[in-house]
Amino acid sequence: MLRHAERWVLRALEFSLVALLAGMVVMVFGNVVLRYLFNSGIDVSEELSRYFFVWLTFIGAVVVMRENGHLGVDSLVGALGDKGRRLCMVASDAIVFICCLMLLEGTWKQQAINASAVAPVTGISMAYVYGVLYFAGAGIALITLGRLFRALTGKLGPYELAEFAGDYSASPSHNLKGHLE
Image (cartoon, rainbow, N blue to C red; front, side, top):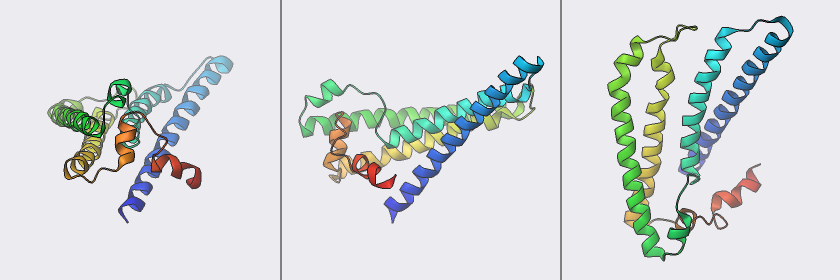
């Protein structure tokens, strides 16, 4: 049941990434065409495409974290055994979790400033633009906490240690992708 819900959430996030990217393409391309043909443009589309890019980046960071796709030092971790990999994973995830807490705290402290600042063209509160940091910080923190819990309780799948070392060939998500699409 949990895996099914997780898959739906991941699909919804991927769909939102596609929608944001498509919106950016339409707005930027539309502005290029308008400037080329009519020497005019839509100011709102310039501003919104920048905000879409911010949201795309941080939502994408959560999706990539879930898929273990962030950069890592695979050559070092790959040379270690299971115990060494597990130790590196726990240390890495602890650091990532602390960074997420710092991101959430900083976003909370900036909330009042962002809420009172408005975008120059659209007039929307900048809290809507930077509010994605709540989602990214909490999303990555939850994913990291889940993996930390599994690592510390011995419930970590062997494929997770392999993925942490840069080997995605044994991953269930790697094997499922062909069946889901």
